[in-house]
Length: 357
Length: 218
Image (cartoon, rainbow over all chains, first blue to last red; front, side, top):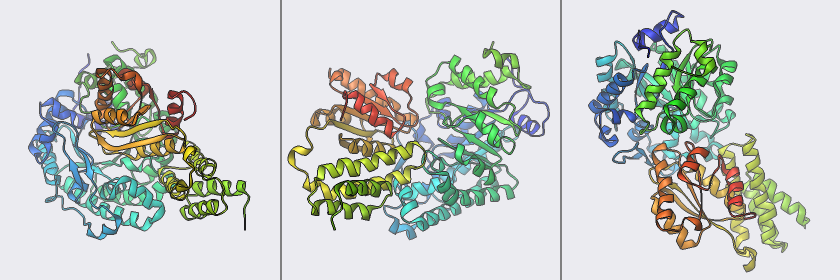
């Protein structure tokens, strides 16, 4: 088995400059699986930045992937703005109730203070600890839920999508106030020495049309990305589900890397926008990473590499979305080991045969 | 001013497709005033509109906002027409118990499936979201359902789907119900693994599956 010759930062920096690297960058998107690495219960992360940091650092040390992402769930900013989040004892948190029951209460909403509200201060603490501990060798990012998706947690997803057609101005208002929270949180993340990692589940074409994306999501994403760029950070934007209809808009919004889910095709993405943006994805998180054998993980990883390793703006081998909490460690190792075996420049013999020694 | 019945039915269907709630209500009232059959107006007007909307959704002309607005228009018309149904109109409908499994509150997908099933002639008992596995079974027994439909968007709750089937097995009533599953992380492979009777990738597909599972028309 091959071993890594470079640290993640050395690798990503060299890759960006077109210099020699030991293997492609690889990011199995580890979320609460990190709890399993240190034997913690998922709910213990609540209000405990030190524990989140410990879990994420240990998970990185175990698997040696290329980006650490401080993440527990999508609701941290909405919670800081008044949404109710339920924390099961040992599973990922979920939204219990949006911040407002009815859109008529919209004026009661205000942007969150990342240093005071909800769990945001604890997430910032986790980022700070992680960057102090391993920040010299690996990029530490903080998950940031983008304006349109955060807006859906403020008023409820179904209400928000109805408002698109019934009362579009209110949707803009909800996105604007979400953006303000996003900008403050992005600033805090960057001030902590980290990089915001953007995720925008509801902006997917599985939910809204490309035209609706352009009107309600795009302008706010663009302003958010402009701010992050102004602080000298590059931006990875993840949107779940179907996205082929909005790739060009994700690029136009300023994303430097787009992370695509398994409802989208890497080959198509490469042809459509690969000369403008780095691609990341898209091994199936549930079918392959959670439930598959190591052999299936190897096969699926090679399939992705074959499609995208020669993307003009580069490629990061990754899962299509955050990994389920109970993803077996052996499957995460299998993804990384496959990427190590394939190496860089890629071993075309391995890609052709689809086999790994 | 009396429209022909065909025009009225077509108008109802169009009003649903065009997401025009006011027009749907207006035309539904006209159906009653002109003493046309309420059942036919639902079946060939409102339900036809939702079916067309479902097609537009599959063709990616419509997305979730449009589909929800179409269903709002459909339900507004239904409120007008339902009180005028004759007793034997509804006949014996197949019942479906539907819900989002415990640990998840994403319910747009479930709601779309519910709408499409209802307009295709199923009687749907909606448990809501964040539902413990045992409740699916208890409700199915209570209402004598043919189908149990379980949805999730979160991988953490997939085991809850398997649990519903385990409970059915433990109680020796597995053969009495067809179990269908769906949602983001679910695949045919997962459905097979937990021993579900079917998986569908979207709401329109779910109707076809439900029809197949009950052996033909709803």
